[in-house]
Image (cartoon, rainbow over all chains, first blue to last red; front, side, top):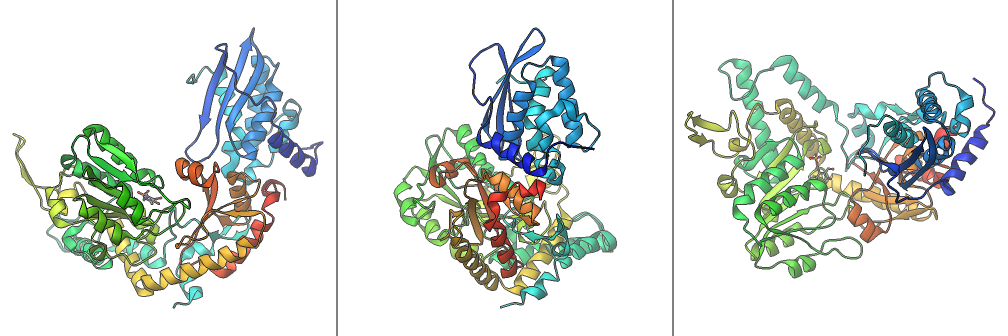
Length: 147
Length: 407
Ligand SMILES: Cc1ncc(COP(=O)(O)O)c(C=O)c1O
């Protein structure tokens, strides 16, 4: 597999999203679907909010406490999914999970999210690198607790 | 003292690698590693005399009975109690639940249960439940700025309404050792019950329940070289006799008829319903024998020395914040500056170092440490100064925590 990003660039991208998170805000709007993600084995507690209109993810925002991996991965995800159709979003999720699981995936649809290619080196952090994606997956599958 | 390099040979786990480094296990407050003798004792039970306890008339069942009850004697001697005051549980959590449930009849509306903000969830939630049931009040004994519980503070919080004081002997967050004997004495002056959570003390120091004069003491086998799923509840015999057991079933009754007339066993069997964790008792007995051979005072002294050594070295680094440098036990709670605890945890993992990260107890962290999360390195007597050197080296470059993924 070939990547256009060097490890140094990947590190920079993660640190950039960690220190300057994108789309990190809480919205108080009933049209958004909200999901809360946490885990007993992990410190991260993250809310993801998605506004879907006419089958398009018009807005993707998030807030909460998280480590660099969960914060940066959710930040990158929010940029990646914003403006995509539900089908496109599902395809991105599918490829992202495949990458994390060290399976074949389409690099082109993941864009900057490929910086998490090495997550399996720290298996305990897989939960962090997927927290936002699992949240959106639940929203798209309609399997969520609003709250 | 003892030769730590000899001791390390007894712990097969220490021969393992993690992320291609020799394992440095600094998560002993979560659970301890097990020596070969404990593993062998458990194996022997399954290989040579597997049978139930209190149930059989044949030789191997008799041997199980002997080993099981001998385990009770070993535990009793270890903490200076009588064997009939030793109840086997699944761990500290179950012990505290038995105590809270058993004291329910003695707690009335408006009575006060005193705990602290540094307690482990298992010494908080059972009391919340009882308080709700009985309309009793949970009160927090104030801690000092450092997060310590002092006798003065307890004295100022006790009142004629106090029914229970339930506190940790050693805090799992900051590692301070409380003056349990003085606290018990103060508690008894108000006629209240003194419940000691010894999960973090029994493995590390000489615990003498008679000297402390505690009413109840709970601890877990797995934090003191024993297997998981076995623990001990010590209770004064008179109190155990008065208490209603949380669990009912076989082995704890002497007779019952279908009209609901049940005759209960006397303590401790009254509290041991159902088939017990026999391998657990056998493993724990072996663990205690091992600890006694080394000597609890030696263990305490050695860990103090390790902690002091680690703190002195860590203090020289300007990127490490230590939250409990003055606490007596081998627990070091810290953060690497500008690195979220969980990221530091992965970074240590990439160096083969096992530490715990977390919001160990949200309240105490927010109120006393002013941070959302911390890293905890907790030592035991098989850890070495060389391991601490490697840990300190890792801390130095902790700012490059993404090395865990890219180096
Ligand atoms: C102070 C304290 N109390 C109670 C417990 C609960 O022990 P267990 O999970 O073995 O029941 C722990 C374990 O982390 C502890 O540190």
